[in-house]
Length: 285
Figure 1 (cartoon, rainbow, N blue to C red):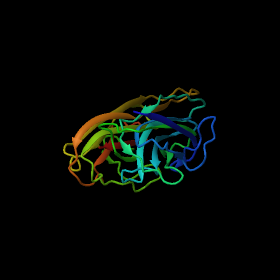
Figure 2 (cartoon, helix red, strand yellow):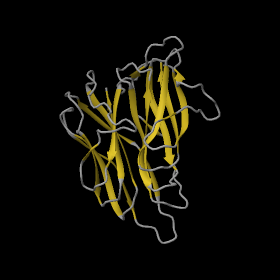
Figure 3 (cartoon, rainbow, N blue to C red):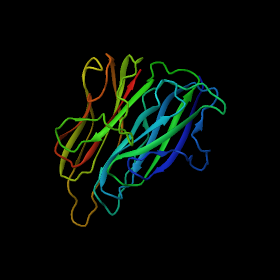
Figure 4 (spheres, one colour):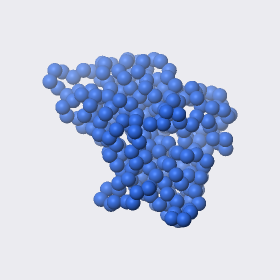
């Protein structure tokens, strides 16, 4: 088996507007995405990291997607990176390790003249107008990853009211109409990734979950994605800023067919931590 990691990074400066990952550290890669090695037939993993600098009050979901060069019938392949949020502060610090996707088995389109190109994008969804540096690595392979996900469906939404179930299926970054149809060849929902970010404008503690309602899949899934808490800073002190990495949950539930619209939901539970975002990516095989 032959595998290679390919990396791109970029500054993400505008909320809900995609930024192409067109840098590579000290290297200066050509425009138009990276050219897949001629021997590579599959995308088998994604690793990514990013953090907001906390320069402005708000909250956001940091996410990404691949575009072009896919041979799974989809135009894009969605993934999450992290959720972030906090109050205005004169100094903030936050750092996160890299998020790693579940195993993937995404076929790469057969190379044409000039080679197959895959473009990598990232963005922030929400209301945190902060500076963000995103770093994304894609692993390609000459061999399939047995049992890996072939398709992803990504959704996110404002979740501003505590103990209220909210549909996440209306947006993904700048895309206000992401695909909600389950791929016709999918047989199983293998994993669900979740991320959240709240501005921590109110005191208290809360937890977040993602719900995949039965219908498109055989059984309803209620999945914990994290928790948080805050108390107001003292006069003259800095408020807190929080960045939480996306997490993966194993599901392995049969697909029964249909559409995901309104079936992927997010919820903040406990105390109201202020305005926030919840996101989910569903990985099918």
